[in-house]
Length: 255
Image (cartoon, rainbow, N blue to C red; front, side, top):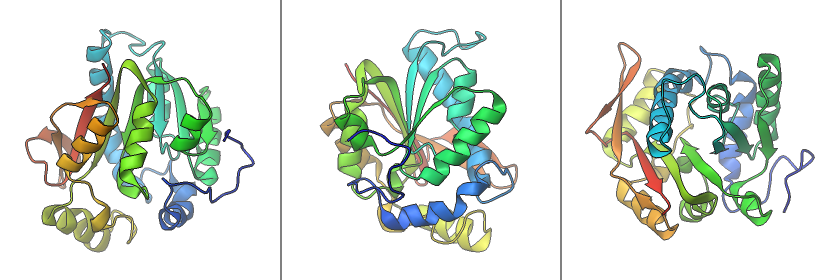
């Protein structure tokens, strides 16, 4: 199935969860408001952009201090939302394809990219549609804060893996299914601090690192050990840690 700007708002797909789509549709216009509903992603964005840049430069033997260290790399951002990752990666020289199942998100992303003078290839659709359309695999697939929102995570990871070229990689970040994550990411972030709208996350959809490792292996990828990500609530700064109990990131390689 090809991508289409006129595709229906609710795409029939094994990866799309209708309840998740409704939730994000209500927030779509707020993507680029750093004090709005997506404030946590804005706080995280500089941290994760730095990690993605360093990981890609190391893997593809690029100079991270170059003006355009990612020049020529073809990146696929699955569940790109309003383009918070796509824009800075484009500025680093990458050719970015941003895919999202929610057309409202892409309208926001396209409008903002146009205002910034950036050329980004945004597609309305799902990862399995991308695979079925015969899209060439990418140098890297980004699966950032998405997997905990899809309907069928194992198949979603397998389809994402199918879009990684030989010698390429996939970067996944998500939330662990632990009581600590429930306490901080749901009770704390949604109900006490109100950093996120209530219902943004669902505990039973959080992903344990061993589950993600299994799915990545099944997708033909070789995952590195996961790395913990911790937020200091006072300074609003992220750092890497050995604590995998809440947020973590995993890099997986093909070949």
